[in-house]
Image (tube, rainbow, N blue to C red):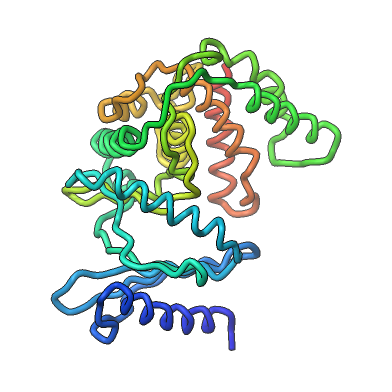
Length: 321
């Protein structure tokens, strides 16, 4: 039996079990859509189950890697975010209806809509979508604020210096590293007012990208949280805005010293209110995010991979100008 067929059989078994746990009649549902991730490190399946005249649900099952502690952290982060936004009708996190932490599976309510990325690709004006993304993030961070704390950039600076050193001595190789190395070595010169700046600490999504935000006409929903960590709010903002910029942002609008198109930056902060658009921590972390994404790029052979790398290089030239 193939790995994928075995995965589907186990997913169906887990759906029946989780539906029963949630008080649903599994026999009334049918799987109408599915997505599978099968690579060296991960074997995941996501299925949408529909019932006639009723609400749909989504099953998520991670067969590989087996890491129940990390999976539990993911569920905890999702539950915490759902609770933080429970009072909002527009900014939401889908409710988890039942879960099996040992099997690494859970069942949640289905939320309809298009991803943020799809909306941007289908409409020339991205302003309303960026504003709505900012509003969701502001509500999430605002509902999970932990403390205010002085920002210390030395760990990021040291990490970038370490990467540059590994590339120079041959321990690590990435595409375009001759251009990457000077940026990484000089990252300390871009800290500026970020060092010691009092930043806002909240729960962190961990992987807030243009695929993980789902928008309908009335709601903005986010899913696929990573572990329940706290961090400066700038981490999520930088991750999201860099994802947007690399995939659909107008690169000719990226000003010197910034890593995001100016109009997109302004639109996002029409919705986000916890920190200002000139927050020095965010400006610095946004530049670090460009290098982080560049360093992690794995797709070096496909046309999409080549195009995205060239876009990242162009963003870096503006950010570090």
